[in-house]
Length: 458
Image (cartoon, rainbow, N blue to C red; front, side, top):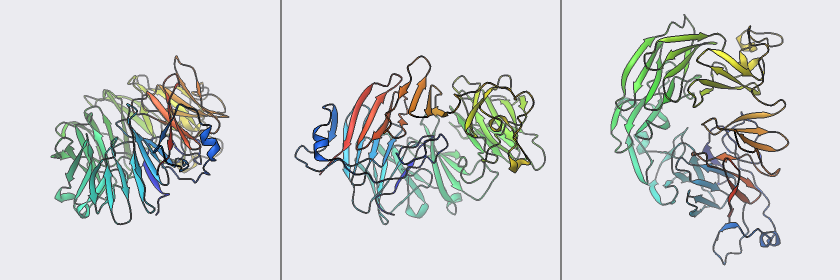
């Protein structure tokens, strides 16, 4: 692998001009080469462009190959020869990239990893100061975390310092695969590949302040198994192990409540999907769903045939919005919404997304929605590929003749035809995308221009 391979764990959005502009496109960026503009084109640039370069440098700007917001709202822009980090206050730092250097950056954990085949260095965001350098590999599903000491520890940025997590002895034979910040950043969950497909407790929970072990942690969501076994909400986790659903206090790693779920023999219990407040949690039994009270784990209702009839098997892939009752499902080229208070679908863009059978589930012929879902209104506009933009549910992105961003009570923001698919800041106050050799940053919800950046350097 060489400098033109950039790793980035980015949720739900693609960042390159060559990426498929659909909500379900591969989210790990693919670097493409761009022809730099002429010197006269640079001289004609608008005066509000922020040139990240030495004043005397004649080098032409290069086109970005990846654009990522880290959790502290630092915008990291990576090119072939240069990388820059822009802090929320507008301060910009840059880093020269060597010929054989690779860059790993994540939207889930702060920091940037630059590495060769032999060595790796962890840089802090937004300063790009060095936090760690040595023999290491990037964590598979969280590439801005480094695995060190032959897999016996991981290191990551926490605050502005380095945090070291020692792998417990019981997991020395396993492989660490992902790291997740939970409980409002006070805890860190390190998940391992143990080979189990039914145990949601394959991990260790650490104190994010000092790296002390809090207790047993949780499996990697949708990584080591074909379905999710863990869902997080505020200070609690909902975890599946076999036929049991547990509510776990993330402050102590203690099981606060658990219940045995009557899912049925040879039926898969999976996909714990909590509301943001944790007052509801939905799980799936093969194609069907059960909604529980999040505190008592008492069954509130059952929803038949909730699994989208797409090609994602028994992966639900849903999320509950900030109203704590609307479940949004994506797939089959569209969207569906379900009111978990009533268990009723409120809209759906096609038969498959509202529970029509997919052929792998024994269906045949044209997909026929379950009774009562045949004439649902559409959730999205006809003929457009759409999806959520950000995690709050406030914004939507649509892919048509132009890429547009929509939100309630604000005008639709239309991107330029030559703009790449955008990425949104974690606070959802801005978004960014590239146009040739420039990175454009615009505000939300109105779309006003905040800054334009260029990758230029010695």
